[in-house]
Image 1: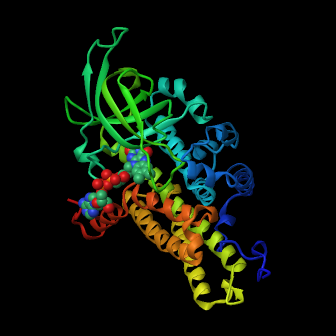
Image 2: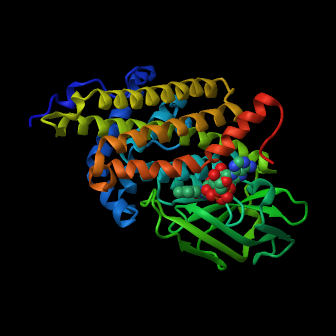
Amino acid sequence: MTPLTATETLPTADFFDYESQLSAAEQRKLRELREFLAAEIAPYAGEWWNKAEFPAHILPKLAALELSTPAQRGYSHLFAGLVIAEMTRVDTSIATFFLVHHDLFVEALYEFGSQDQRDRLLDDASSLRTTGAFALTEPDHGSDVAGGMETAARLVPGGADDGGDCWVLNGAKRWIGNGTFCDYMLVWARDEADGAIRGFIVDARLPGVSRTRIENKIALRTVQNADIRFDNVRIPEADRLAGINGFEDTNALLRGSRIMVAWQAVGQQLAAFDVARQYAVERSQFGRPLAKFQLIQQQLVSMLGNAVASAGMMVRIAQLQDQGAADMARVALAKSYTSARMRETVAMGRSILGGNGIVTDYRMAKIFADAEAIYTYEGSYEINTLIVGRAVTGVSAIV
Ligand SMILES: Cc1cc2nc3c(=O)[nH]c(=O)nc-3n(C[C@H](O)[C@H](O)[C@H](O)COP(=O)(O)OP(=O)(O)OC[C@H]3O[C@@H](n4cnc5c(N)ncnc54)[C@H](O)[C@@H]3O)c2cc1C
């Protein structure tokens, strides 16, 4: 049967036109990104995901878009968020690679690196000639990693080959995105002398670093996550992240990346709506398109409402960022709320596709599965909820 309507002529999932809040130059750049994603990512993303392969060959083209560290390039926070949402809308894995590398590794160098570290590393990292990872989570410490971190660093005065000071790093990290292939990783460790959390820029080729790919994932299969061990890894003092003096500084970085993950929850919902609506319009049962059934329309409208409400919250977060007022409790509410709505939205989307919603050929199964990673990383739904709970009651239910 002929589809009821051509979806190109229908309103987009950006139903309240948040994109119009961008400058004309930012809107142009977003269109450029969309063209790149449509040509270079969308046709292949399903196959990369099925094969659990990371497409390293796209990095030069991705870098050529010049979207890294948007604030340094004069772009707004809203633009930075919409870039991540748009990437996620096409492929959650590529968006995750991008935000781990840029919003955690590169931003950390900008914010907390010494001039020497920036001079040595930033040019290559910003243009993706080198790649970075962010190694915080441990096998036995996820949500409680701030207090429970076991990876340890010991200062050895005069211990470096050139006679300078060095640190000896021991421990293990788990789930580290880009961890199998990255050139550098930011590793968080407890200083054996005073218990403070310190950050180290670790060259992944150093003796004593071993990395094992995490296999058999059901989400973000294109992203390469690693278990990483550090056995007496010697790191020059020059590679200690100069501006980090405790977990509070780490938290400042996580606040920024948590915002980006909440934008991913928006992108995931836009994707689910796009796919479900197209399917509902094209697929017929009982001699008419699914879109003509009231229960299907009700689900599509709920999905759209969730997506638009989540995006609206994030537009306000971007304004708060502009004012320096996006504190951790507000950011935690954004991540907790958008990821909860996302889970509802992708479940409705999966249901609209019926059986075809559980095979990746129709995109929705991948969207549904990838949502689970967003729900858990950058502070799980529960932990972010409890951060807000603490802020609004004055008492912590986390511990
Ligand atoms: C795909 C993926 C990519 C990742 N990438 C990275 C990365 O690049 N770098 C990195 O450092 N980490 C990364 N992580 C790790 C991620 O941040 C952790 O998975 C997350 O912090 C949760 O930790 P956990 O998995 O150990 O779960 P746990 O902390 O063991 O939690 C298990 C469950 O218990 C709940 N829970 C825990 N404590 C409480 C409490 N006090 N009250 C109520 N409920 C609680 C949690 O919400 C969760 O539902 C990644 C994870 C995934 C899945």
